[in-house]
Image 1 (cartoon, helix red, strand yellow):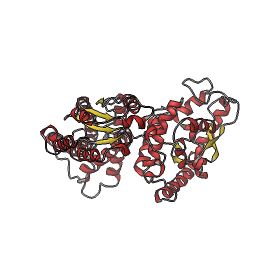
Image 2 (cartoon, rainbow, N blue to C red):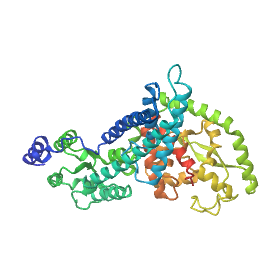
Image 3 (tube, rainbow, N blue to C red):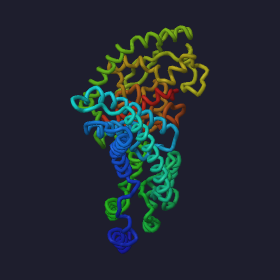
Image 4 (cartoon, one colour):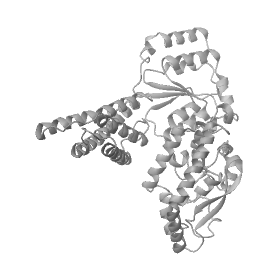
Length: 482
């Protein structure tokens, strides 16, 4: 980069009027909308309760003495419930009917538990139990107002984002791959690709062709630029340019690599752009003998043992229904690949007719091989329950990448880059890919699910596991399995 141009850009980024307006807290930042919604929710419940109490006093006399926790506890329970359905995540589809249903259902459960706690455990002495009429009306009002606020918030945020743009700096091949993923995620911001580079034999050669076109890139950035995405290897970035990008990132505009954009915005890993040392470039919570790995295993053993005891009558009933519905055994056994690429025998309730294993390796919609009871079991995910035995044996975990059939694994190992990284951890009954993408029926689907699986391998945490569990419950209740 020309020293004079570099100095001019640095000065403009630091002090110049063109970028001075960027030094602000953007409305669409990851934390500001969530914080705004959280504060609104925490204040809304007590405001509605006090308003309704005043109305009752005006028409029916005093409501008596009540504890401060009546104003606090329902608001806290309500916020926790909303968090489980993504009510504070700017990426949630809050304008859909599906979100509205889960919004109301989560609050119904939260307020039912709150009412039980308030009535049975926290009301004694001179304190009176809260009026059920006021409580119910407050619940309905809270659920309605919070949904209306989120619908307004979603429309406002999307309208704001539709005026923004991301600037992508990448070789042609990389840019085309990224643009395809960008469109598939329905991002409202415009994607501007700069510059157009001469065609090369590979991405590295194309990266060399960038030359001095950076001035054009910065000329196309303005106050509506939501971020700058760097799609070339960091080793190819000139040190002076790296200094400028760091200044932009800290002062004005977020700067992403393609890897970081995938992980922050889409909670995936960009499989095509990671390096062979990805598996040890960042420590995972699931590294062998870590505290989290041991805690996760202890929880798996305890939960699977208790669940098998409690669900034993249901398991027996389902097994009987399978035998009555179609000839053959109730359980389906298949060799799958587990941790460290070790094969094991996976157990499931049989949902297909016998001798269908030699057919297609994928299950299609309305697949004729699926039995009548099998359709119900697959939609509700109840066919997975026998895998609790695999969890108890240490072959699987409750949460992790899907344990794939050995035939599928052999194909994916040849055709999908870094597929073997899935086998660094135990496979799970449910997982991040299963709840985010659903059933895969092609190599492209397998690639998409691999992005989610590798994200889980790197970012596994208690919070992420809890999110997966709650999303799995949603899928089971709504019968959206396949």
